[in-house]
Image (cartoon, rainbow, N blue to C red):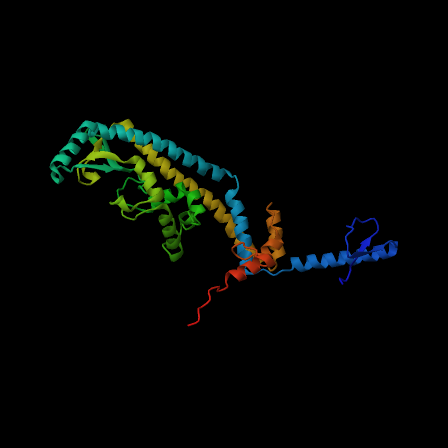
Length: 357
């Protein structure tokens, strides 16, 4: 026989008419008042117990990451400048790559390239002089010095994802900074930190920086060999494949400067400046987030109770569920929910039985 459950309710309250449940209805105004005071006291005590949860490293980190995520997704002027700079990169890449094709094919006509490839098929290695490249020395001689003597102006222009931004043909961090700024969302989606260069701009090489840079390069598919792109894959290969052109000659690009006009050269410089501007705008945007996060860390470190951190988030206009922070682990999984916890425990069981010999 089931023991009936008894609930105390106030007159006028709505309550379900269920079997096996008995209700004691309070009609006396004095008793109702006492009951309400007691209930309010219990509720306040429960809230008090909740707000007095002490801060620890895990709670600080979870609260910090929630607030930082809001900072990164805010529509600020710095973020808008970064997004516009990236759009301009795409625009300039389209203009510069089309122009590069015209300039290169002017020096290495398509018909000559086809003829040499025919000779290669007929005579083999001795006629293997056509190659594909994505970086070129462009030069013009339309300027003169103070004595009226003709001057040659030339520079190295690399259309690859990791191409240098200062005209050098050698790789540097500048090309890597462009790559992570350009593919920021894609890298974030793979749990990489594309902001590592911006965050560590004043720091020398260190294990933390190296770790995150390597993770980004791997996610981008960077093969690591500047002179042999056969190891490139993924985003790097897809990006670079758009800009290869046929050139004649097997030596390095610096030994075959390709003639162009002053205006064409200026257009190539405009494209390269757009790439550098993306890096700069990315740096400026991340600087604003970093400054906010530095202040946030100082405050959270000083707080003794979780309620203080939640109040800070509220003042910042960020809604944070205190109870959710408490009942979830660092990965965000609700582990104290009985069903979730039971599922986790069952998943750890060794269900394989050993057969008797």
